[in-house]
Image 1 (cartoon, rainbow, N blue to C red):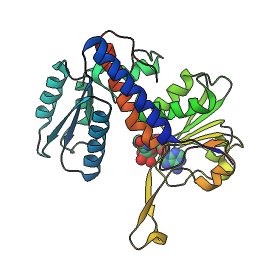
Image 2 (cartoon, helix red, strand yellow):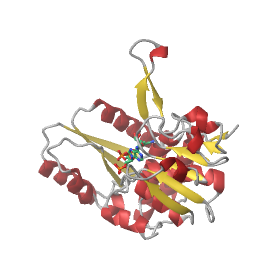
Image 3 (tube, helix red, strand yellow):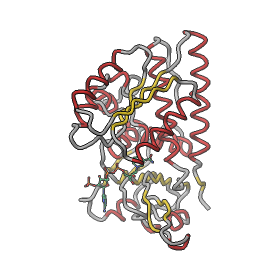
Length: 299
Ligand code: NDP
């Protein structure tokens, strides 16, 4: 049987480190990390995510401020709020919950966030820093950063000699994931919807990261025996066996089949998911350390 990588336990350990670093900063600099979460509109899933981020931030000992704006908010009003948060010395992390209403250009809003407060890691400056290996000054997007910590649990920080395949090339998961793996010396291939013979390519992977958004697409026979499988996908599918109208969450990997072949594997839920929010907290405490000219903790 494979090692099941416990994302909940790994996330709890990241949060414990964030709490310790926060206490340390309070003692050394009388400084409390501040995070501002901005949500526009009524999207129920976004409301749940934002509430959960606020709760975790408080548990970390941060000042957590939420700005809830109506759907009718104009792009200029949102830009003005982000600029106000950029200038606020008590705020170290700014998070604008996506998606934004369609009349607002999300790209413009993301690029308005000051790079040193961009704890989501989406600003071009942070994308460029990751792309050039300047990890000490970058903010790395939270889902790939969390996935990388799980990979390190299985392989350590140096992935020399290992083949990694990332399925998915989005800007928030696939591309930054590939850059992190490359930076750790893995030999990296990025696959996507135009890739030929994906099963054969996946079978070359010592480390396989699935970030596709297609329920259970990656089958057991695509997995190299002993591989580390990181399933980023979160897909809700009908589960009539649980009762009428019920659903359940599955990843992009057919878990039972893959678990029969893999060396280690993340479950869904309970794998990558809990790491994302933990890394958001980690990025915020790192930002506060940088603002205070202190060496940030390493996660
Ligand atoms: P996107 O939809 O932005 O990207 C999906 C990628 O998968 C694209 O690059 C696409 O290729 C590729 N793809 C689609 N179909 C195929 C196929 N048949 N074969 C090969 N590649 C394919 O998704 P995200 O990166 O935003 O998210 C991916 C998954 O991760 C989703 O399930 C999402 O819910 C989950 N997620 C989980 C998070 C967490 O906290 N755990 C956070 C963020 C996302 P192409 O570019 O050619 O279209």
